[in-house]
Amino acid sequence: MTTAAWLDVPADHPFGPHHLPYGVFSTAERPEHRVGVRIGDQVLDLAAIAAATGVEWAGAVAGPTLNGLLGAGAQTWAAVRDWLTAALTDPGRVEEVRGHVHDLAAATLHLPIAVADYVDFYASEHHATNVGRIFRPDGEALTPNWKHLPIGYHGRASTVVVSGTEIVRPCGQRRTPADPAPAFGPSTKLDIECELGFVVGGATELGQRVAVEEADEHLFGVAMFNDWSARDIQAWEYVPLGPFLGKSFASSVAAWVTPLAALEHARVPLTDQTPVPLDYLRGPEHTAYGLDLAMEVRLNGEVISRPPYRTMYWSPTQMLAHLTVNGARLSDGDLFASGTVSGPETDQRGSLLELTWNGTEPLTLADGTTRAFLEDGDTVTLTATAPGPDGSVIGLAEVSGTISPAR
Image 1 (tube, rainbow, N blue to C red):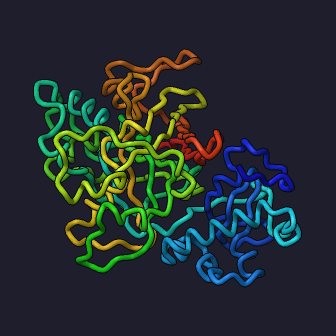
Image 2 (image 1 turned 180 degrees about the vertical axis):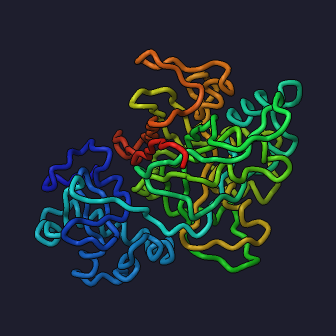
Image 3 (image 1 turned 180 degrees about the horizontal axis):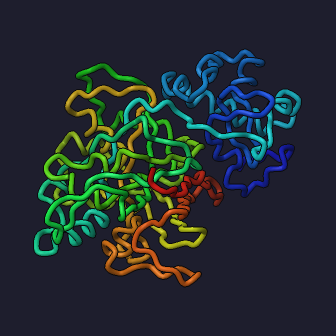
């Protein structure tokens, strides 16, 4: 495994040269937003060093977001990663790199992409089954279409925010079965959804499909994602057209995007899919895959769940293929998320809806307080780790948010 000893980055650091996630940062001395790469607890100003060295892809990283790089395509992504690995691990290039490195603690992190469009899927069979049992206790847990296609909904791109942004408790209509009429007010069932976000590049034309075997050419990287959900607003509004205001008030994404190329050693066979999906969702062997990510959900610093991403039913390549099968175009900066990640065990559920069974079984925290859903002042942090090369570990950057009162 390559090392970056001159940067004081240990070989086993989760943000070592085997990882190299991309983000957007600024500093007090230079407040403009620019593309950076995390190495250990430092940030390499990629835009500045690319301009200084005159690399052919310098223009792709010159903007205030990652969108230029996303639009440059998969061959450029590979070239940039190869160049970074060489530059950060070659002792002979120390002077070339040194002047462009900043302490992470001195940097302000920003939303890494200008989100062009946002789609959220529902790809965990365990999550979908739990939700079905909660809301349809006398019926089938899974809807008839669930194992035939990756179900999803279009969210609101303009309310995707970077980790650390406060989350204002949303207001809206809600009605329980016992209420004679709907009421308006702050959500009383504010929830989390522990998810993985996928950042897309390589724009396509309207009417063009992306096949399962072509999807990796458009999947730039991944980031931890929290699709905050107002369950009471959602329950009243979602029939017949699905999620709307119960979801669109905020979704949080990590500040650092892990290249999909860094997760080569985290790829695992996809869980058994029965019935066999239609041909456009199958593709050649190994083009639909799972990812071995161990996630953690922390509420006010306490771990309350450890969802395993490797149990997900639908592959990211299948999700992207389905997203475009009707001819919907891809844009540089598109973002889609996996939906809540939940495993088969009680302590692997990725939402409070499941962990408390819709509030009927509240959690007791270490400080003695209980939670059915989120209270004002609560902070939720999602993290994940994945296997890297030679027994190393890749640590996905956290996504965190604190609930503030309704306005």
